[in-house]
Image (cartoon, rainbow, N blue to C red; front, side, top):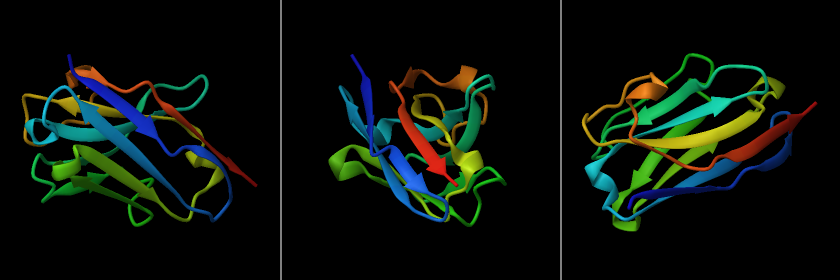
Length: 125
């Protein structure tokens, strides 16, 4: 049974930083391409960033490009999302997701096989 467990969310002021972590249990993480999504109240789940199985390639939504960095440590079965220069519009529940079929995951939530429980990020102005 594969389980994804996120941590690192919290309350931060505008311009601050947070680092989210997502630990993969039940299967070695390099079996999956990984992505982060977020969902604000009343809105659809939105792609934030993705990373290849090896970690050699990461890609981002335009809204976070230049501010967020996605990395992975397959030896620790963990992926990370470093979020800098946070804005109020970054406020959401952040979810990590795993795709077992693709080296690079898509931006479509439906394509992912496993999800974490989510971690709340709140950016106050």
